[in-house]
Image (cartoon, rainbow, N blue to C red):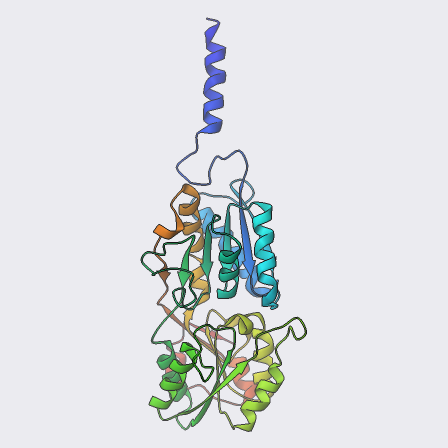
Length: 339
């Protein structure tokens, strides 16, 4: 009879030690997720945080109970990323979620032991984050919205909206890896070729990489350069600099009455058109990958996931401000129309 209380006590201890079916569930303390972000706090981060918590909840994991989130922001000063990544390592987080190629690179440079799960990375192989998409082979894996056909699709859409268009600018920057002798990265060359194939005259405008002395790009000068070349529209790449300053870019485009096309997921920036694969879609897959990692699967064994769905959004308010009309047939194809 006296052994029953001891048995109940032993079972209670075991219940506190054994985990449930989820990698993060029923731990004595929440697992710590360090987040490394190229940009700063704002609407994009707020939207990401909401979906992040919701998608974790869908697999049975609750913020505060099963995991905590610790974000660190570079606020566009990419030179700070390595210091911030080292801070996550010092704090002893269980996994680093890196939003953006430079953030992912900095996290991987700071540690080979802590798993890194990335998103908003154009080409993880070219960036050196993984050996191959199928077998990453290192301490990093994640999700990419890389779409080899996006450049052609965006240029074709511009031709549909503006049949008489002749000149198009593309807003890029010098943080993109893989530049050739002329300074053009693969995405720059792909957009230039796509424009030329449709009879357009492309203008690649590349912003300088931020420095301590000049942390903020001179977007005003970039738009003056576009105006000088008589650009009739601008395609805005989803690079770290553009991502961090997307609202500023959209405002300048309106001020110059220049139709701006952003990549998918950037509708909140206030551009005229949003078209392409969406970075927001990549966010939705991060919790499932993080859960696998924290259950014990090495990141190098988890294939990189690719998002291929293209999103089309028109902003009628911006269209009115810059004095353009969207053909009704195109409006009917939109996933969303912002009034």
